[in-house]
Image (cartoon, rainbow, N blue to C red):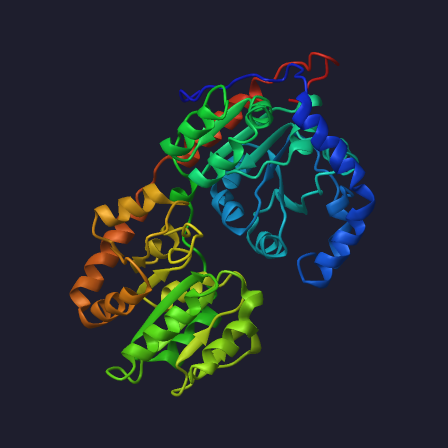
Length: 446
């Protein structure tokens, strides 16, 4: 092994009052779950053709051989484990990836390698989770970052399936929330045989919440491959932009698109050919964003509608899924969204790998160490508020030397492998190889 310690927790544990109450409550809510799914489907938050998967009913056959189940809540978590999945497949394992959003499901269909399959995660009802686990019978269950579904965790543990939490991220906000239920979270964490945090701050919080042993092999997002782009889409966009000055606001949340619009309006008198690209974190907001920007008198083209970039286009709204790799290749100045709201920012490594100079606001608790690292090598301009974003963008548009220097520094830092993927894979393989007979049944899961 690599010095990352496992805590074999396959022995029976009492559920405790909190978990027992949770399981009773979720069972009582069972009759309402079909209605909940129907409502979510109407809002575009569920895939009608795969709705049964949310009830634990599989739509694919279980592969023969050892199966590692990896649960990643949404887009960011699922993308962060792609390199890890490649490594595990290379070791002869089959991979089942579960996620909970339609967006992440579409991305996984495009990105998962041969040897890996995707299903929607079952809702956390005792019957649904039992159906899911009894069909797939994973040899190892891997949870990514911080989404805990108690019934799934307890049911997997009771079946003797070893549990690992990888790239764990516990923010100060979620830490304070869990502190209100100390026995509940300690009971859940005690069921994991392996806990790997992405940074020391998360590791410290996990220990304070009752995790028995926590190691810090590094952040998997540091080792991810550059986002891809389809050349057949990239070339026409480059041609339509031509020599226009361009900057990008990426992963924006509500309110940040209007900030980007105000930046454009402030800079446009000196740069009438300026093009602002906006990629909202949630593309379903595209219509509302376009209406708001057009109220400001801006000419908006929407990618989801097939609009093209013309000489009169001021804002190009990329309200589509899975195309960030395109836009990081089109703009070398990138403002990272979620940093001017209480969201905590998004992954700075993605634009950095594609040679972008970075700008970010003060809210970075999701990636605090990463943002500090980029700022430390002068790859990131920190702005204190929305009012100073225009100054930062104007500065980088004007000074090509600074822009290139910051982009070079960002790419250099992002291109240095942290080794987190290798260390995490080795720890998971060691855990899988070290599984012993379930104390109650004598069955082996390895």
